[in-house]
Length: 281
Ligand SMILES: C[S@@+](CC[C@H](N)C(=O)[O-])C[C@H]1O[C@@H](n2cnc3c(N)ncnc32)[C@H](O)[C@@H]1O
Image (cartoon, rainbow, N blue to C red):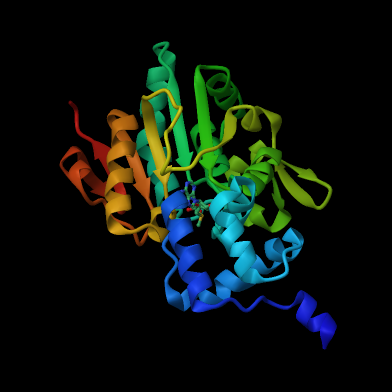
């Protein structure tokens, strides 16, 4: 019985939950309704036990002042579900519409910048990279050798480390269109994206609510299934900031249950299922 208590989920009070929810909302934009109390307490059980503090309320109080502890708690409370070629219609659009435009731009000596904002463990940005490289190895290498870079950002450093490794469960191969599998290799019993692909991608920790030390001018931004956890004003502000980062004519891809709201609506023309194009200035 004692062993079960030492490893089982912690039981916090409604007051603890309210404090945690306020903190996570203020720092990461994530809304944690009362209905998520079991999830919150179970995800914070590990960090609480590692803190060595006697009572959960003490741990919650520490989160107010201890930045490292707060960061660990916020990471534990993020939901990182993702997958290779998730919401595949976006990659169909990239292959059919965006890729030809990017290739023309690169051929003319221009630069291409793509951003996966809320990248989680990198499946999205790797899917995007291989879609842009395409199924012809010679053409893909030419593209990879041009001025092209992909940025992948997330608040959670643990998932970013997975993305940097570029190694995923072997079963993920089924989600990758057959011609694009040339950009992967077997690594033990896992699949790994080849070095040519990995070297195009930079993974960086970035809180979408904070300042973005990013040079503006993206051809496309994927921000999918991340603002779903934010409240309406936060979503509207985020979309406006993403829109500012897009080049005129650039594309914004959002998650299946998300929509564009707020002042950026006028600037973003819907051109497909959860795909928007920034109008020329
Ligand atoms: C459900 S995943 C989505 C992954 C991928 N975009 C997809 O659609 O498959 C949401 C990601 O958003 C990240 N996230 C949540 N709040 C964030 C914030 N304030 N700033 C940056 N990333 C955040 C989480 O850590 C998580 O990895």
